[in-house]
Length: 86
Image (cartoon, rainbow, N blue to C red; front, top):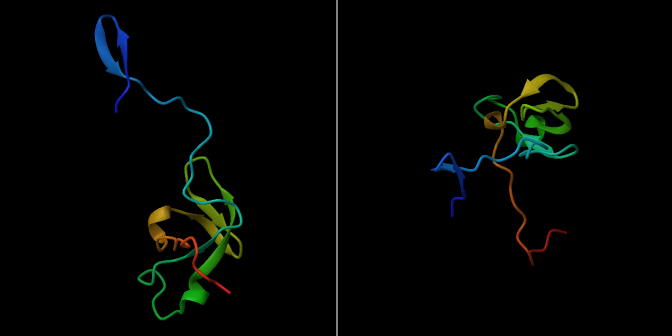
């Protein structure tokens, strides 16, 4: 459902306020580069830990220089409730 705010008699979509950036990654999260970007390497060799998340949504990784975008990584695997991982 869209929220509209009347402005000068015309309904305008309400804009979200800028504030804290909703990020796809968090500090300490482990991310794995897509295989196409690092061919010939096993998943463990392509996996790095997030050192920091920038305001623009890019991440800096521990042990790897530069900033990296979400599209460079595999989709995070979600753990299912009730599943045994141990």
